[in-house]
Image (cartoon, rainbow, N blue to C red; front, side, top):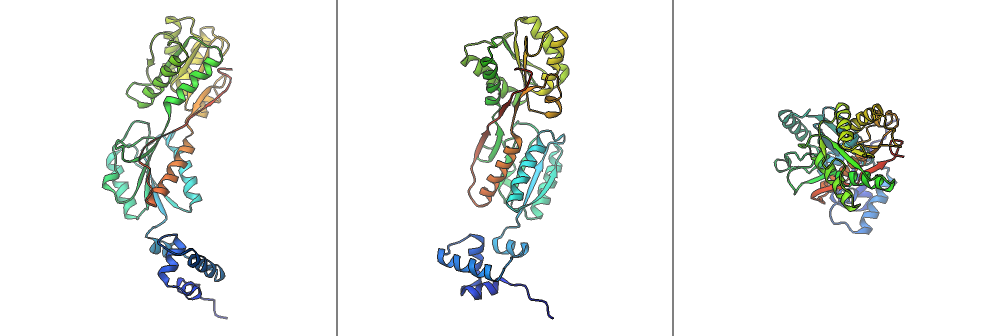
Length: 334
């Protein structure tokens, strides 16, 4: 018995009594097609069990249903959750994903961009390794671009970043609610936007509560446990009455807990400690486990991907969008 010939778009057009172009517009949701005509096309496609293949669909719509994910985060601690969230959204939208890692190298990044454009991707998500602004690549490209975690330096681009100012303010409000009044802030290097934003959030929330920073100033240093240990010495020497500290990272907080305990401070009874990032390798393993701020990076990645879909459809949302962080409460404060 001869095998059955696959159903084509021509068969659907004949069954619905319309042109091939009208079937294409109706199936892709593009162009002006009357609701009644669209329903007739859909019914005909269903009756014939018509399945447009990916190549045909891309020729009809001018889209390949493929997107590029370009990351610079060679360590992956912040980039990977963003990528996972984006991939979730692309999977739900039946988009194929091509992932390229530029490892922070601009020449490698240019090579990857050329490769992705040669593959005719419909759009790009560019994932950074920090929240510092990065050079825009949008003006040189013919496809939409969305920036995630590291914003573009062009305000006309679409960027998604964690709201670090509010994240740090949440940490202060939590400590104030617990009755802590002598609160210090220890964070990373001043040249990181994340350090500056978190310090701004801490300062604003303390002012709001009518409190001043313990020790009188933010302590800037490295993103490391060693710096956390050193800073504990500085804080407790400058103001022995300090009863809480907000740290700019979980690494700093882990070092802080260790040094405070060595100096005879009980955490959290005498000295509450809050971290930042919710890097679970550290935050759940520290003794006691760390209260910390989670940047919700998977949600950020998923939202960036959804906005790329919109941009591909001509509905871009320019500007830097700040995504809410959330406080994860564990035993280092309560």
